[in-house]
Length: 250
Image (tube, rainbow, N blue to C red; front, side, top):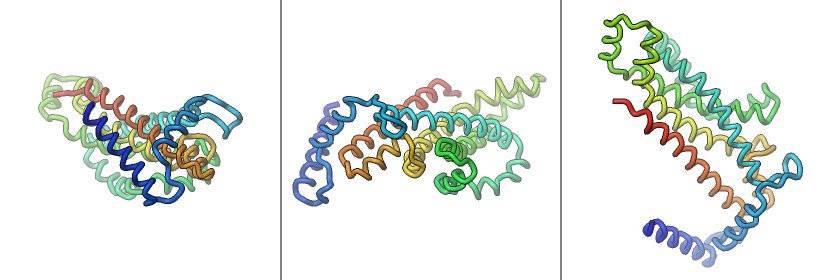
């Protein structure tokens, strides 16, 4: 804690020195102005004066809702499909070319297509999140299923265990740590992408809040929102990390 406090003090001092020395533009925020703006923003985070004029709390809730809906849909698709592809070599080889073509595509590249097909900011944002969260979980699930110890599988087969019991009591527990790793990566990727997506689709959301502050040239508010985005991502990552510790399997 002492080291962290010292590093923070050094960072704030260098930040203030950089601005005072004139090494940045006149729009550059200072620690004092940013702190003052943070107090103003958080003094009334729940106000609601229409769809686009709302407090930062509602922007944050909107982004989290979109991420959780898209993340849940992607998980419900990626885990069963990844399980199936991990079990079947022939099917995995057949699907692999399609995966290798689609997986490197930036989720934001799908944004115009989503707007054209879904004709709505909310559904388009969720659509982009689904594509962001799909691939890390899918790939991790495939690798986790393929890496299950064959001794467990052979022993279950020797005992005449029904196929559904093998999935529930052998395959799933052994593959679960790898699946959780994919979920952790998917959630962090989704949180990154939703910020950029909301800057483009507008409406509500923490990404829209950042872009709206830029249009007002309120750089201090942008810094405050960046801190909020980072802290929220930290909390989401720690939630998945805590779940990962609970499912360790040896």
